Length: 496
Image (cartoon, rainbow, N blue to C red; front, side, top):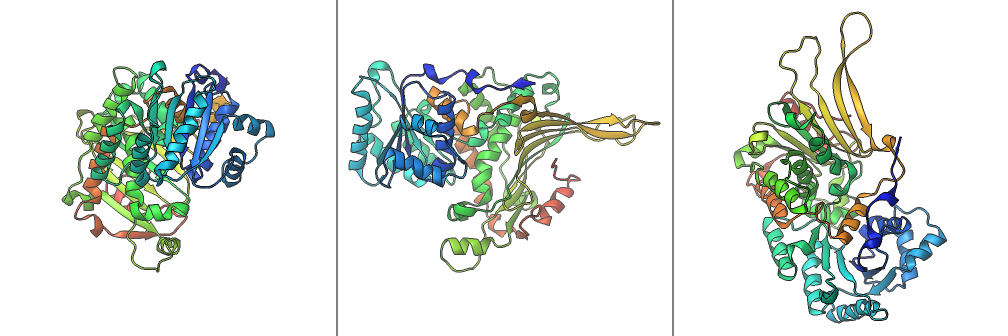
């Protein structure tokens, strides 16, 4: 049995002095993901040896009262020892400031400079925008005007920013935001995060494909019949409902999580594992997505909305019930204009308030052209990203006994079964890469724009709002029309 030891990971203690500033430090993202990840990294000595964390929010807190607030607010942190809390507080600085007041940022610049002066320590300056995208522009411009982007040139220290999704809401807004950021930063300073890419099983996609001679020769339209990517959620829109009501499932999940998974599945083998080579190959896939024309949209997409969503949305915005065309479910068939994938359909779906929480990618191989036995089934390779990170291969076997009857069995590789110990969370991995300056798991500007170009071909299609919005009962498998739709292609949704 293999044991995973987070202490064996190459990192951190040898990194230059680092000061990480989080804007939006009192929000749900910080409480449920960022601070828990940093606490865990601190416990396992995965932070730089000289490290400061500056948390910026509008509320008035001390470092201690801020951490107490986060511990109470977080849905992830259940208990923390006094020793662990005391150790983390040595890194922590809380600064009460408002993004709308330039003078607050001038004071923040002094706070950062005060960390360097006493011991003449020169820090890498990292900024995490854990805010709504509408605030990215204001924060960036004020950072510049307040002198916060001037790192220590003498010691070649770096300034980097990390921005959360959604990165824009269509191609035009994404281009505008990219243009703004690239006005103040170079591409190698900008880290656009998609936390799905930080999950172990997602990172394992390239390893399974390119480190095993078993799969890569079969990874093409000669042997693969179709590919499915499903992101199923049991929860509704919840506290994000006002945001979700403006975006819907397509803009919330397709543009980032789902298309990033598709790119990793379909990409060619990069020449090496540098960030630029990997992102070049992903970009080729995203640019090869076949635009959804007016004629094709009605045939290739199903939209749905769970019953009760309209009432939830109206209640959240203190409005009155009325027409609401926000989709909480979609199923989409798309193709790639690449020789390797010519004619292979990719079935993509996501939905809220379904009967299970499941994220998986399944590669459906073609059935044997000539099978000697009765009952041959197609092989299926499944990457389960959540809830249980694992890889499964369905193969045909003989049932013991007289005669020959076939049974499709499961060859399983489960992370939790094979590796005993703690597996790093997605945000821990991505925060560490951010500190190390490793962009391989982050998204480049041209990837963002290629993804939005494809999504725009759907959401700005004249037929998009004419598509029926099928109602489905919460806790079920989504609208029955999505099942009927895929059955027209002689297929069924694959769930293990």
